[in-house]
Image 1 (spheres, rainbow, N blue to C red):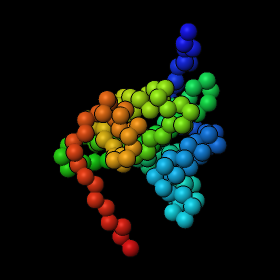
Image 2 (cartoon, rainbow, N blue to C red):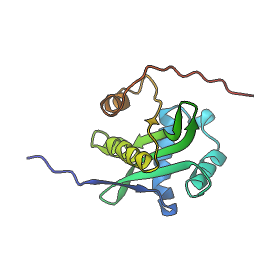
Image 3 (cartoon, one colour):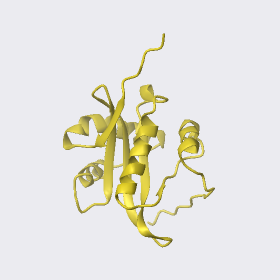
Length: 157
């Protein structure tokens, strides 16, 4: 007999969630090798956290909970586009606690961003991931279309 999983709920982050959000943020950054000497400065983390609660900022955060525990997070940003009249939504960061992967947490977060974007009048949600993120890409291929773009960056000194 299989044990039924409790439902996941997705909600906006609150200031009281910092202690639950921070380990997810740290693990997310470690996944992308921003750890140790390449770790983000504390100032970036602190500023990012504050932006979630500043109404003048386009940066937002939602979290996923299961049985009262925050087990996933998602950051998204609305911005203008030269190819659309309505703002587009960039899903910048998505992370599920390792013990909860494969349980529908990532999908629930993405689906909620889709709903939020629709409510905001946005007609597109997009995101990037690393080619080596096989588990993430397995989900992404089910919920979105890969347009085949390649990202180039240049850090401005």
